[in-house]
Length: 326
Image 1 (cartoon, rainbow, N blue to C red):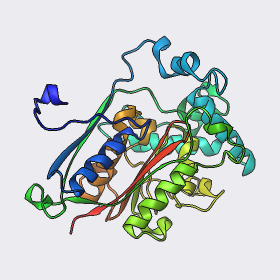
Image 2: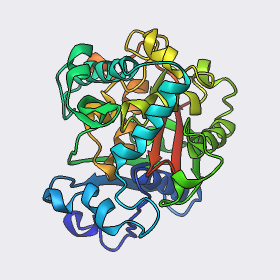
Image 3: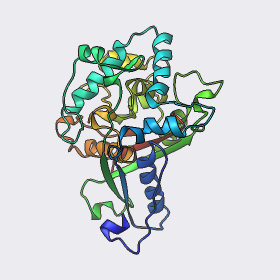
């Protein structure tokens, strides 16, 4: 950032925290401003996912660089397929529940001029798509995508010096619940949710004074690297009771026009997941909703929004609560 933008001599720091990297950059910039050390900060997320051949991909890194004993050869689809299998069995559901998430997010992505995929799909197309890791199929998985996003932060009392409609961070939560290689080896994990998300959400809600998340928010951006992840996040974020997140997608609650629209820009499923950029993009998506400038994706009277990321095999999570400036 310092070199291409010629930002010398101001401080520039690189942040890395798995899939939470983008939100972690915004979190650190917010703390820098809140501390009084700086008046204005720029948080940028960027990732080039498509500049390597298949043998240099994330899948290859899991196979070749993984722990010599724990999870050797583990892949992201394989990890989350375990949760999908467990959740569907536990709640007596079939893969059609996952298809509904894919259809919703592709429907939303078709409205988003910045989405990687801008084409709606049918449940039949999702059901007949090639398998990746049972029960996950092609449309259950986010694509490999390049991308970048940026956020400018300043003190709340100075925000209107720069814009007429500032968005304020009401709460931030970050939690690291376990390690990377041993995350799925914990004997007390039931494969039905992520402790990191639960703890990060609790911290952000305490900051923001949110006591009933299922009713507090008008719009949500949550991590949907796979369709099952979005459903589990409904529950971990307190948007649905334990074991009943699937009801939100079956009842169209999280579709545009529903009571609680989720991933109105298409989520990671349609926008893609350039890892360092996704969290910043999600914060911008919520900010656009609160400002009323989300175009065809706009949720009427969006006032309080939630943005969430989940890193690695569920090891780390970041949650932001955002609202309009005073």
